[in-house]
Image 1 (spheres, rainbow, N blue to C red):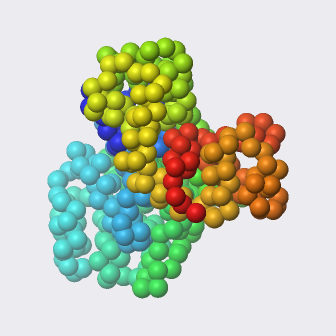
Image 2: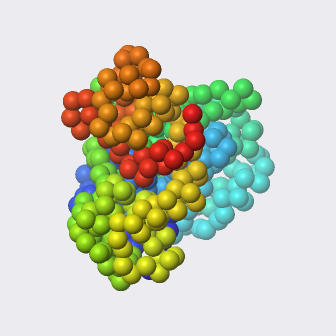
Image 3: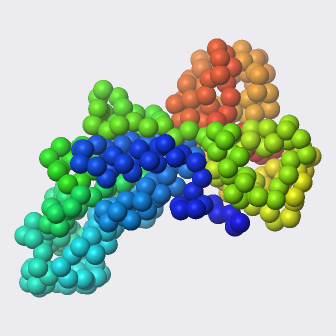
Length: 392
């Protein structure tokens, strides 16, 4: 069985049955229900969303999936362009006449209206495309109108084809970083509020959003002041349970035998039940054709992975932390049972600085509090990398 570091669907998708079944059931129902998925990095949110997309598509329900992290450059122009392209692609089999989005981009402003009317589209769809395209092609500077029309296009396509559809925005909090104009002005939060306002009146389109950082997602969805407060059902994506871990091993490493139960427990613990980590570990085991695994071989594999993949997998992540947070993380990686008072003595940091760092790291879901004064990593492979890394 081959391993991958990308999202998986179909037979290679393991676990999360209840969550995927719920999303598929509700999003294909007549209920006007949307969802917000949160979870730490690489926990498998995208795989869940892609699996749901696959199941809905088999029911011939158009799904418009867009990942904000893949919007490059990170501009509203590109966001609008991608949204239009994906929307038209999702409804392609329902449109009266097939056409390529690129054809619209190269059609002049004067000819565009005639071109669109010749496609037998509804007046609303034609208007949405005409105005959003004029902004994309820099024939218009009305950014708010362009975004409004680009989002409305999805609802109007659904209305025209008399079908329900689902808009999935992966890594939704990053939408606030989108910029526009020569001065790279930010209006991402305004876009969030705009989406919220539009969805109040949508009858055919359901919304699903996801996010990695709890604090930023909270500001958009869960807090009482958030634009989407009480508008979406909240679901936390948890690490694999031990049963799901067993299914992963059976599926991807059917010939692997553990020397003892302790080794199997260590394997599960070092992975933190994170699918991405399990893929990394499994890929290395497969590379060396291992059929028997003991503790020594397991930690040899971990060392090899950290040497080969650690810099790429975790260096970027540490760039999102402050120097104080990294110092706290390294201290806890080396001595997991350390309390804030211990870090204060050993690292020559003030209690206030440590407390602030711990609160921030917990809000980012890098750490979680196990009990009063005791914290643990949500990703133990990251902790192992911190022990040997040279950052700071």
